[in-house]
Amino acid sequence: MKKRLPALLLALTLALTLTACGDSASEPSDSPAPSASADVSAAPEIVADLSKSILEFSVGLSPEDVMVTVNGEGIGADLFCYLLASDCNNFVYQYYSYYGTPPESLGSYADFLRQDAVTVSTYYVILRQKAAELGVPLTDEQRAEADAQLNDEVLEQLKEAYSFSDQSIDFISTLQFYNENVLSTVPEPTDEELNNYVYRVKHILFKTVDDNYEALDDDTVAEKRTQAEDALSQLQSLEGEALTAKFDELMNEYSEDPGLASNPDGYTYTVEDSLVDGFTEAALDLKSGEISGIVETDYGYHIMLRLDVEDISQYSDDFRAYRLDDLMGQWADDAEVTVADAVAAIDVDDFYNKYVAYQNAYAEAHPAEDASAAPEG
Image (cartoon, rainbow, N blue to C red; front, side):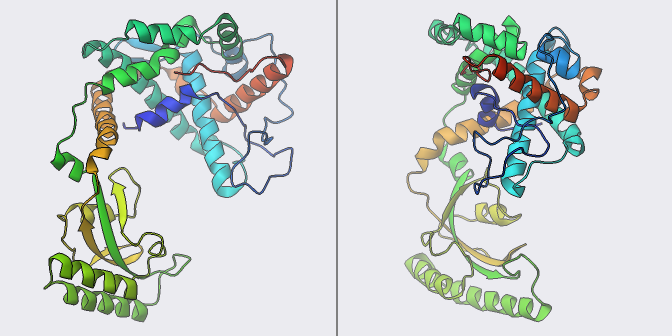
């Protein structure tokens, strides 16, 4: 159970703009992702009943219904369903960005979305618990800042539009401060830790796939392998500046990396970057100034040269956040987590479309208010 904490915080620190599955009522723009005004709205046959709460209307629950319990502390349906709707919304947005259209249904992804909401809920609770355990509770200044953003109008809006209880409002308005406080307990990394986290590398790529990532024929692949072996043989007896100079010469002559022109000094990555399998592992096996053997990935054959990262200390904060994420994963694995049967009973597609329909209807009924406002954490 592991999720990146900054991404989790966004679910509650940004205003929620929901878009449901179904056909768009307007023509899509040229943009790869929907704009704020894009109408990917709830199905028109869903008529929201604003005489009910959003939870009662969308899923038949009340804020007092406990959905997830973490080490004895419960998450109510108000917060859980908000997180589930946020997960659905983010999924729809990403799907739209990739395919240019929203998914017809969330049914195929329901298990993933429900589990993701459970995971996020678990992390939120553990963050507060660990702040108390580690002796870094909210300061008076943080409490005052959290309270200052919750004026009477915002509080009324959150309760009416989202059915948030006072406990959930306090929970989400202070979350970022708890994150900051727990993060403050993570020590500064050593040089060794940083070098195992961030790296800079040049590579010579002999592609074994075409521009559509289809495999080349066997004879061409064999020729690429021979080229890679020849290039490696020219490098293996060299070191220092001679190695760097020869590597650059061969890289400019042979490499089929489409990003070479814009990255002539190599790439700087962290272990959190999503790269083709085998690339990061091979790079981290090298010391600065060393070359790899022939590394095979789905893209082809690579020869790598690891280089020093300039001002590596600038990555200390990123490493500490990464380390906290690891710790959160460990704490979550060790936690006693109970998931109510009501979670599995949620029809995610039906819930999400009704949740959105309610939000749209609420916004129309309150034109002078921002129905999607959520407290900034």
